[in-house]
Length: 237
Image: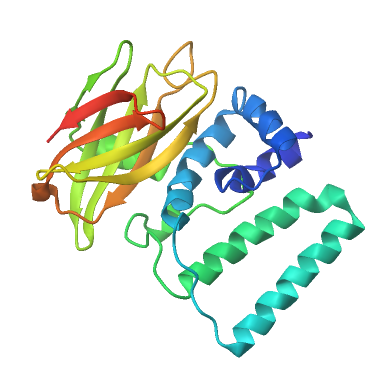
């Protein structure tokens, strides 16, 4: 893959739209590209929010418009398979637009200045890192070599939290979980850990943020867990 194509794969990878060969190639690219890794961390929160969201029923005009978009994407794919990645990015943007027509996705998490443009390469401090560094982190107890903390704040819709995670290697799939005082568990956000990991061997730490519908006073702790059930970090609040 060329550098230009690699960077445009971030949105498609975050939503699981890449085919198996391209997914493996992009994961290899993540090991050497901090810009894509940082952007993937920000986009993964949106991917988790979109997961399981029911389809917003469109009116007849919207159905016609959606059909035209699908037909256009199919014609482009048939005409030139090399444009597939760009088509997938268009599909990501279209999916967000359709969902936004019925609900507000993460509108309280980011100010307009921190919104991420799909396909654009970003450098510097992201919104999750900025919120974490400006807050007072609650430290956690981690598995061997793992360390990190959580900064959280109360919102009208629940709790916004930012995580810093270090000392973890991949490949892994992880989630930030909020555990209520009654023992109920809800995923706040999720991400993939590349083989090079985060906060090890010269790699930067991971910063992620997500949301919970519970208020801070209803939350007992935050946990970072793998999809295989291993607990990497526990942060009591």
